[in-house]
Image (tube, rainbow, N blue to C red; front, side):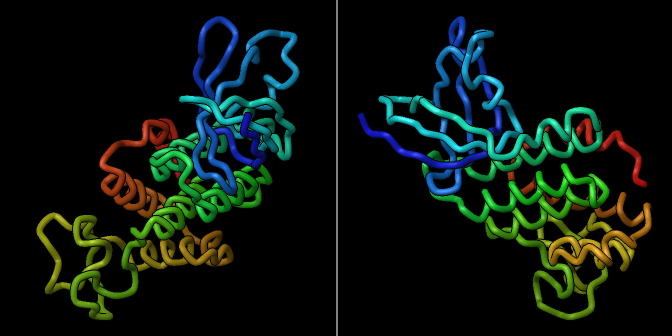
Amino acid sequence: MSLYRDEGVVLRTQKLGEADRIVTLLTKRTGKVRGVAKGVRRTTSRFGARLEPFTHVDLQLHVGRTLDVVTQAETIHPYGEALAHDYPRYTAGSAMLETADRLTQGEKEPALKQFLLLVGGLRTLADGSHEARLVLDAYFLRSLAVAGYAPALQECARCRADTVRAFAIVAGGAVCGTCRPAGAAVPAEETLALMTALLRGDWTAADASQSRHRAECSGLVAAYLQWHLEHGIRSLRHVEREPAR
């Protein structure tokens, strides 16, 4: 029996049979892993509560024919406890988990940077140090950058001119007046500055932003993310109901 140990974040779960559960995790060294946690839906389970979405866990698994089997699980950080009673933070966290799942499509392909971004995003959400939607947008932008899809924000995505007039998703971000395609959005300068601050981790500038610029930023970031994923993020439907603060 081939055993291995790793730490990971539980992205989602699904029922299997009467008492088991399939757990999808993004792990530090192995990448995305799908494993069977046997008997965890029984009230007598030793580690059922440790394998819930948002939980950062230390795991031992053994390699199976189709799915690996979780044999041990110890909680490192129960981020779900801090998020469960705060709707904006819970829905933002749910969108993070769904995005991490979509951006790491191949199983057992190392994705250390994506793992570290997810853990950092959940930690920041849980400690409440910044507005939930700002944290989510920062996570979206940084995870896209790691995946190779960082939007151009300070120069034209097509000709590299340093004067930008619009934001075109299909062009790769900000564009100048000459390269601007039909239908491109024309965000405020402050909105593009906020996106730049979030991508860089400049929280002083991000926290000082105004509500209207945050709302405009969120719309652009969500559209850009979902265009590159070629699929909608279901959790965003709930996040976007929250008014900008």
